[in-house]
Amino acid sequence: MKYITLIIVFLLFSCEEKKDVLLPKSNISIVKDVQDHSPVYIFLKVEGKDTIADLNRKSAIISTNWIFNIDKRLPLKLVIPEVIKMQEKKRADSAHKNENAQNYYSYADSIGKNLAFLSFTKVYYKTEKPNKENFVFYFRKGKEHVLMGNKEIKITEILQHFYSIKFEKVPDLVFLFDKNMSYEEYIQDKILLQKYVTYNLDKLPVEFIF
Image (cartoon, rainbow, N blue to C red; front, side, top):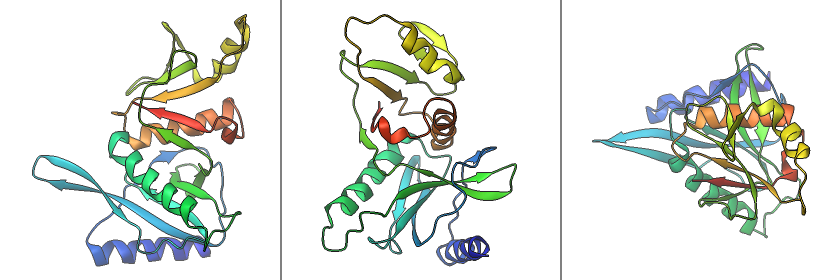
């Protein structure tokens, strides 16, 4: 019932502001239930030839779990700076801080026909290239395979390839996402990473967007 309510509120908000958000889709639900939440919206806005990520945080309550409803058509280079702003705002507000409050991206489960959520609470984004000491898996716009050095591999085989290499010193494994990929493509990659690489992506808390 609470998600029916959430959808109704979402539609009312959209009608009032004459805006809507097209959510990413996946056939996997990572998290199905989030209690005590408040929304953050990032709309796609077009002004002339410019595409803008239009952030609306009016309903975001610091002490609650935040659900980020972001338009799937936006490129990462526009989305991530707005996400960083909200992360910093929540992390810096010690007066109202709730240590248990999480941040989630929302998306639509096309199989279960329900809203689903992906936690990114501990992720720190860097809008730059990783340094040469890192072992980088590069997720590119429009590509199903991940680039590891000069080799293309499947997401399902990332750990297999990483552990098959004999390092003198094991480097940090990091993910680099193409800043020009769509937000939907990013979410779909993140869901596959959570399923096939590590259930707890917070173990790899830094992501590079470049």
